[in-house]
Length: 52
Image 1 (cartoon, rainbow, N blue to C red):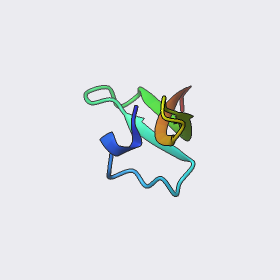
Image 2: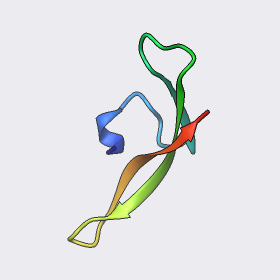
Image 3: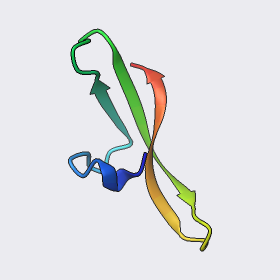
């Protein structure tokens, strides 16, 4: 997902953990990353790594 979609997560951190609403035992870990858009510019994203 685009990092700009989650402004409360600091892009200065490499990992963020998300607990799914209503399922406290299910945690997802996202890793900060970039992809290159069609114009050749880097775009900050959060990529899901899997359960924490």
